[in-house]
Amino acid sequence: MTAELTIDFDGDVIDPGDADYETARRTLLASGRPAFVLRPKNVHDVQTGVRFAADAGLRLSVRGGGHAFAGFGTNDGGVVIDLSGLADV
Image (cartoon, rainbow, N blue to C red):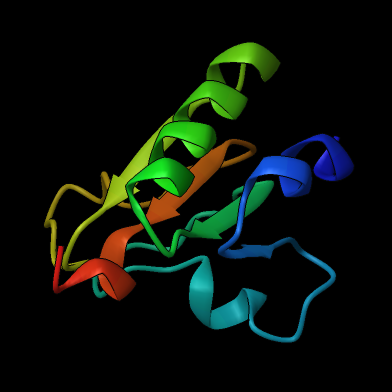
C-alpha cells in the first residue's frame, strides 16, 4: 500500500516502523496510532494523501498546529496529514 502512495507523493511517509513515528503520531494533547503520517511538501501532495486515504478506506485526520484539545489531529489505524511543513503556502 505504501508503494502506491510514494509513486505520486513527494513528501515524507512515516509508518510505525520509522524512527520518527513516535513523535509524528502524537499531537500536543493526544496520541494515536495511525497507519501512516504524511508530511506533504506541496498542495499536490495534500491532494494525493487525501485520495490515498479515501481509496484505501482509511480514516483521515489533518493536523494543522497540533494543538486541538479534542485530539482530531491524530487517529488509530488511519492516515494523518501533517501540514506543519506548509507554513508558507
